Length: 343
Image (tube, rainbow, N blue to C red; front, side):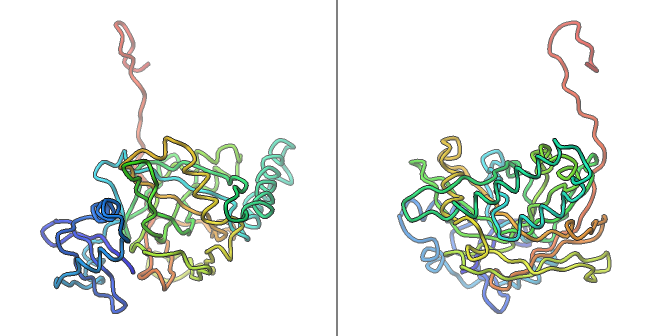
């Protein structure tokens, strides 16, 4: 089942089920995916069963919603501060090659810089050897990063804005899992969605210890929530489109556990083992990594060009243009007498 969040023409929120013919059928008496998830948790029932029971008669074309800019991210929280966006890296079988291509210049750099790449390759090998533990056992922990809160999440069609100080804005096509934390602190997985994790690969290439900085960017999610187990093999395409919508770069996008060095269960364990990520009522969007980067092929995406990530099983493609934010001058002000306002 594919679930969609959208706005009606008068701005009201709705949840609908997306059919194969591109029609979205609204659910009755349910206005958000979060509300549907809370109902499923309270009743101890599958999300899809509740959705089927609430399917009404109101239908709208997905194409109309997209063209009118009324598609929302498939899950959010009314308070963005209660939505955590995070991810894992070096989890896919081809990711080490992509990371290595990004860091090729290190062969001519200092020993300290070369060591940064060596650490990432070491972590990749650890995932190969211990990322898929036997049932009931705990595997090796992956690379982990924080991206931001719900304020950074962009819907299908919305621009991904790189900050003025960024050195690059590049796509990271990934599968993201969507969760709501139950009243007793149990994480409940609603399903999965296409995601563009969007990073600054130039900053990361300059020094791997700047990875945390490179990840503090917006991201895109959706358009649909896949309700059900993640397919073992996911095959799609990642593209960069020029300002006229013509393809200028593409690569196969592979995911699912058959293409990964970690199991989903292992990645989830190492995220939710931290108590601060099990606060009742919170939403989590967790990206699972990728092995496909246009940057690794020497592509630099320009403002006005678009990223497109397509996996047919997940419904319509995720497409977002790149833009650049205006410069900002932000400095803290001291709250004590006699302090300079510019200090």
